[in-house]
Length: 297
Image (cartoon, rainbow, N blue to C red):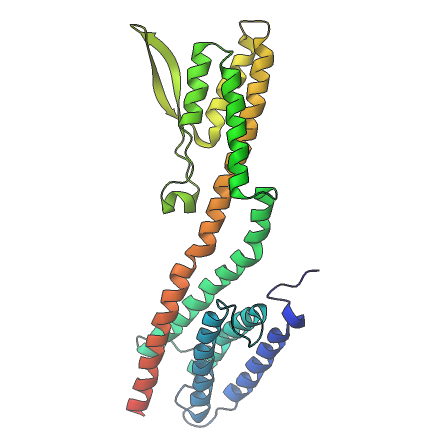
């Protein structure tokens, strides 16, 4: 089995994190007396210090794992530490606060910490899952290579259309010309397909007119050609329509893969637009939290 960020070094950082959590739990249980367990006891301050140091260190690790020039450790090792130690913070910070929630800067810091961690969980999922999916969708080809294949299929479709009646030509070519790939960031992120095509082609005063209808996922044009097959007007037309239908289906699948690849790539980036600002907000809240503690202490 290939090694990933979760199994790096035989999951060394998982065991380190478990040990750290158990030690912190023992410190948490050692609180006694009138005050009981809370962030204001010596043990509470110690747990808070551990949590604060971890937050600062993990922020450094987050910057470090994007730098491939550092000679200290491997990128995979740093990411593994980032994941497991970051997860351990959920419990360590909870021990520090004794699971108490209120309307104050302490709870704000805790809430931001959870948002940073859970957005990081999504980031882990994207980095573990999406590369394999992208490789499968691309069939081992680059995007430029897939676009070249798409162009070859399109040329094959156009060649067949030249041998068919004008209604078929106009309808099929309109679906080709009105194919929607890409679009806004929102379109890419949510996989929206605004493709359209002509339908009900007719002539008025020797001018071709038609209705413009949606053609998401190229399904409508495929159904249009499939329905025409039994009505082939010439002996060779059913064979041409079958070839056309085969190319349209190949084109549909390739477009699906291209659109899905763009969507997955966007998702691998979008989480950072939340994770990084939340991390900065967490550092600010942590500083305010520490200053307020020492001010009132």
